Length: 267
Ligand code: KIV
Image (tube, rainbow, N blue to C red):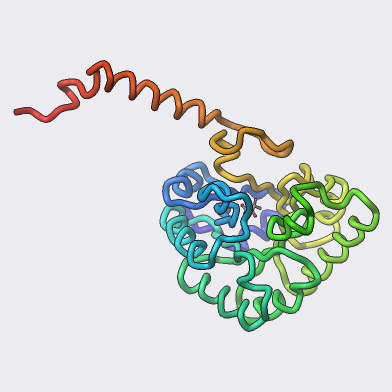
């Protein structure tokens, strides 16, 4: 497989081909994504919840993102690798953002970094792009601002919020972001933004008209969450499958059926 590059992703948008992206955090699942022919892997800071069992993404550190991104890169050497910049690794100053994003690029093999926010991060985005770092924006519901939103919710239902989204999208585009994740946004607005611009849009809870779609691996295979968000489609019931396997292992061990002679070394 040839490595997926930024140029290839842009070409896909130009040719009207949809882009697939999976958010994941480890070698093995990244390898599965590459074997399945997915275009891009995102090392999302959702790892705070999905991998670490926390309530929010807020306490994820830069060191943790780098650790996970290195593992994902080893599993998916040819996919377009994007790494989330964690909370407070890019908001304090442009200089700190440059230093931290630079570390991610140098140490992980990432091809782009993702930052949440709109107008407030425009200068940072522009400086990163000038330094040669491709930037992915993320607007709509932004999990690092969960306490401002008061919890996960759809953003852009009121005319005021829709206008804000349009403005942030335009500003991020002008600052040089080549791709923007739209999270929990009404499909009509996502469609309008996608069709009005060369920037690649990736939706999660933003309807079918985006240039591509991202889901968290563990959501997609039914491993995470007792309640399924409206925008998730489960392609497997992973939790059920694994719990069943573990139960059968327990029964076999307790009955003395495992290991068998074939599964044991000779005398
Ligand atoms: O952290 C993450 O996994 C994300 C995606 C869901 C877009 O930001």
